[in-house]
Image 1: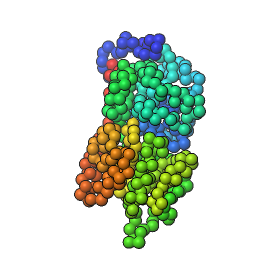
Image 2: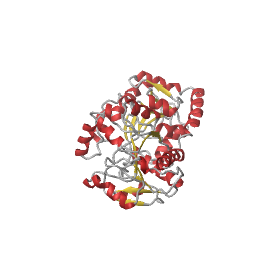
Image 3: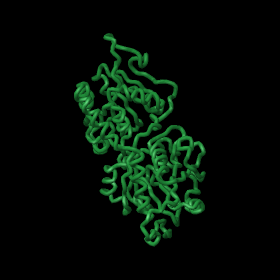
Image 4: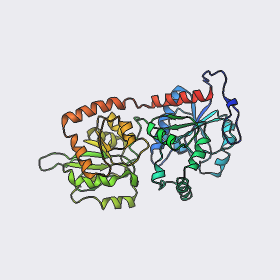
Length: 397
């Protein structure tokens, strides 16, 4: 394969026979895999790697041996520099030395110039253009660059046009990429999918913090009934709009809201202040996979009032578990659920309450659960890996 000075492959680098090359050396950049707890990028990487490796052998790139604990053990790996290292500028030299022919990154950021390999980059969403506050886990200098990056469209265009192929996780985001003319490269959709190992976002931090009733899962009301569980799985960034869920709980007696994910102590304090008097809210601050699956199986609904998403994997996990979904009425949730959910205006507390109560009708609940599970069955890592592999095959043919 030949290359050009700006890092893109020339047409002369394409194989003329168009035949599938079973020996193409595909590497996956797994250096964004988190070792403290598996976030969405980590799960996306692990799920795709495991399924893709069954179709075509791949090698993962890591910068910390601890990352291997979250990746399939049977997949070979290479230890290289951190993506935050100055050595990232010369990454192509390293990859040339490894014999890379195709590199797939689950992010749109990857270093290296004058490459001679095909490059596939991923843009999950455009959320940070509307909500530019960067993730707190990033180093401060990176957060500053992140914020500046999202103040204009042109930096994203520069990154994506360095690819030979751009991947995104939904038709909704693909449409936004096209609307904002973010790349001249082809864009293919490789969706997220649930896995048996897709944990709930963190290991338990030693027990839930409860606001409202304090005795845990076993308590019952005066009639001997247990509270109906509403589950929220996701971060607590402002655009997630968790305050709408919390504010609604004084209008949902007999329900308990379980906020499952890990939460920063400052954010926890601010959210506890908006819990209505007498409302039943549980801050788990991280749950084990076992707890997550148990709660999901027995929940009245999985709920989210998010104003924006790249995909919404917890919705698919709930639908597979035959748990109804109550979610904000935004395009990505319409796409992911296929309409098999109860929707509400994310600014409407009363709308959320009404949507939850819709599932108190047994026929509504049973009908939605059945259709939702059938729809969710179409989201598998095997299918997503097949789509990615077919796109790569066309790229190198």
